[in-house]
Length: 206
Image 1 (cartoon, rainbow, N blue to C red):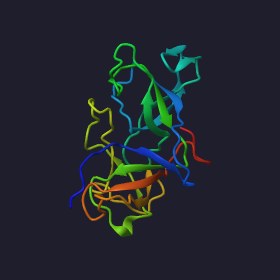
Image 2: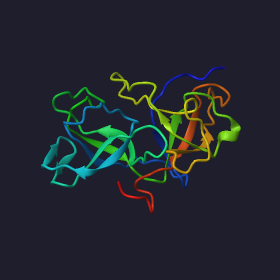
Image 3: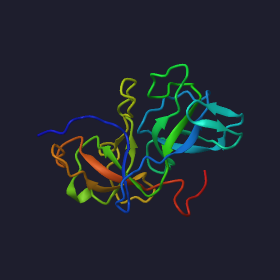
Image 4: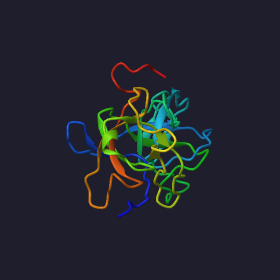
């Protein structure tokens, strides 16, 4: 039976210790000058700057200058670090129905940035038993959905196969043990840890 092709980006499921994810997130900033849409499940990376004006976000609070680190969508591929994964957005008064962030729209976003968090992600191909424990990178073959608000990011098995590579973005922990999820078929769902994380102990700053 083939796996369903339903990419959703990175979905937090539990801590490395086994404790369940409790919805914790940190606020980050996307300026109106950033011309890339963002979706729930997208990986993001700090840019090395922060908000330069006071930011007042409905439902999220007020943020003084410098208190919101700026993030961009994480580039796919080896060597590109990840700060965390988008799990929500502050409400947009100009579009309350939007569950994603359109291009060039200032927004406060909520990011799961715990380096010990495990995530579920769909692979763009099959995962062999011998690939569990290897490193992997993201791939953006699919665009995010403006209907569901979900990311189209996947784990790359086709253009950059999983390997023992310390600078890769993810580490495959296991194939998700769920009915309808087969490791031998394309679009396998796997649990991963962020391997190249900007908040990990000893990580080099951006």
